[in-house]
Length: 287
Image (cartoon, rainbow, N blue to C red; front, side, top):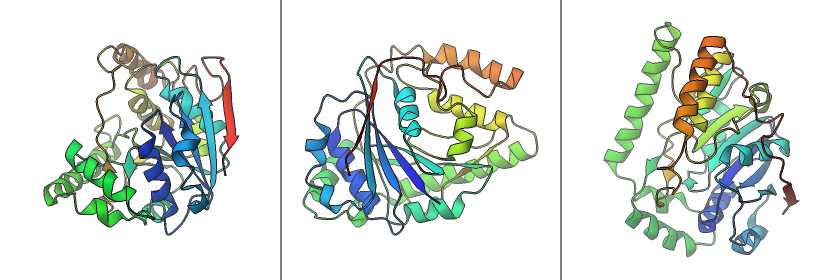
């Protein structure tokens, strides 16, 4: 099974370098990694040029103009140029151990979508990890693991257990949906993603595009399963997105939620098949 890893990027390219190395360190490599770039002004190839000789997978850069926070469109762009049967959507500031891809392949089955959660690191720990990783020739997850506390690991385990309960309630028809996906890490078969018309491109600015996709996943008849809590993912610290306070997505989300569950409307109007914006999208094969 070919896996296309789609990494959402907007500047902060020191994080991108680390996730690319984490993917190279996998016991089972992805077929390709696609950088879904929402208009970064930082020089991407300059940021990763030193590590390119280490990478054994195919690497693509899909770029769109910066005319606002358009994460949904950026991810849809990447899917259009993907070759894998399974899509893994990851944020650039997520890191994981070298069994990550292997475990994904063991969990995923027809009719399922994988949700991932992560320990959110504080700024101090993030800076220490960045310095230590920068001094290593290859990615070493042990550097990260030592900064994750037992309490933080317990929190992830509790979230996993809650997701199992949510799925049980859903299976017993006590809830409209079970476990909820989070944008930082999603695994979904490409054919299912296309049937849903991908991410809804009416979401511009911060938030709700992942929750909307989750509603449509359940409406379509798929189920969400949580990733193994023993494989801890970490979310590197960064400042809050500046568009969060001014985002208008919440109002649109609740309107769509009523339509999705009320009318069984699992396809979004603007998405994979028909982009909302018509500005050019550029693709480059880096490696």
